[in-house]
Image (cartoon, rainbow, N blue to C red; front, side, top):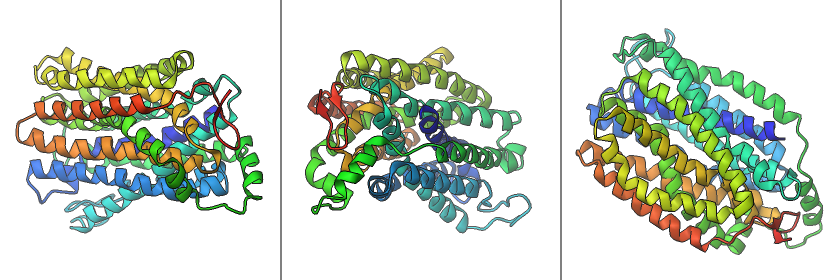
Length: 436
């Protein structure tokens, strides 16, 4: 069960991260060649943001089917959609360049248009992936072990960041970024095409997994319920406060995460002058550290509670956000590495317990939908908007305002986390999570 949930989130986020890395290093040149460099970077990160707005749509659609037909079957579809979209990006010709001998002069405006469409489907699939993967582990977990079991899907992003950084490092072939280099013509496409192999492995594992016993019991109960409604409407009607609180509590952490995994890749290469191999190598090391923080915080939340661990992370994020860009802009390599490691570590502290905390907040009949909506609301607030605003600030030479923006967002998360109800002692059954 741990393998089924972890491999799925690893694949989903691997596909997501290679897009983020390519958005920082490749897409401004390949898909937005008609724009000036600063505008091209902004347009590139705008395509990155598209997926975050698609995530809530995926959470609603896949949440509906996950709550009606089961977690397992829904997760098979999220994996397939993500894989097809990612491979499609790897085969897509650029604005004025071809792909593997096809459309050697590019396809013009269709290149960024199709890129945005593929990115939307990536986000759509991720919108259904996270909640389903966490429910697989949380609803199978024995009493007292839910926090530890729910850690496994949370490790997926760490594994994925490691793999995405590693594959891009292998295929950079040095540090050449001109339009005719191997990396810019073929190398960047290979990580996208390799996703197909990961999807095959993921499907093999997931098809072997049985449906969760909690869902089976809930399905039997709901089949006798004459008041049964759409899971999305029920989640909004009965637990809208929990959705908003969950989204606000995790918003700042998502901002740190995607700033650390995607935006800082662009900032380090284009503004700090570090080479691609160096930045990608640091990403590999940061991914290991990130995974350790996730595992440690998940186990820690079992002892002191989900809410306390998330609160510690949010408070640290307020201070760290104000220190981050002065550290990066100092020009000291060690401080750049510390900035990257610290950013992902603080996110990891909150992300570890989130895999148990969000499912514990919702009733079984719309748990998939409710947990997904809260999680992806945080993605929109923290993952889509901050990188776009940050790109404008950096283009204007005002990096300190990026830190202030992140600190304000983190302060909002502190308030929302304070409003959360501690749930580590709740019993997760087919009706509602109740205190043991």
